[in-house]
Image (cartoon, rainbow, N blue to C red; front, top):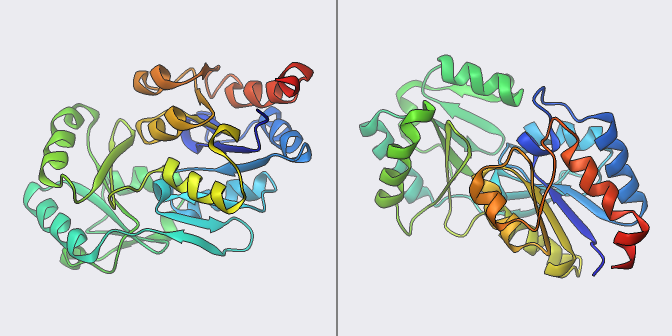
Length: 272
């Protein structure tokens, strides 16, 4: 069946290690769009951190941000879907974080709230290019500023195996928990993930599951790679994503996305 919608993760997938989109990948994306295929970004990033990359690709489509908690037009800014965490759950989580002492980011709208600036906030701001959106508010951080799209914990990679199960047990049934990076633990409203957001968007455009291709590399890409008509894992993907993928392509530094997109436009791919 012909692929009509391509959903692509950003970090570790669309972006190389320098957090840039290669010229080859830009050309491949443009060729797919010219061929009538819809190309969207599906990321755990804030909308404000994803939109500049959509602009670089010339996209005028909805993009999936905050792991599926927000779908918003890359050009129009129109909101297609919002699924923030319930206020009472967010407050419960912040109370728990105060006790555990974990570093956390709290996202309301396109403002990122933190308790105070430190090495983690500096690293995160550098990675995402969003220093201007970070607001340190001291102890007020532990009083929910509104319904967040997600809450993200940062830690040393060696802490993740112990921390993730602890939060999964504490908030079972109240939050969905995933990871997009060895140091990031991400918590969203139950049922929120990239795949469910992509499917809701696809329904609006009359696109079937079998007509969707999803490309990713991390734990927060698992559902979309596992359920898409064609799920693609990057060569640098974590093992759990590779195990459910129909295709494993090259790494993000070796044209992995471009290779797959170019293959969609070959005569053989069109005939299938």
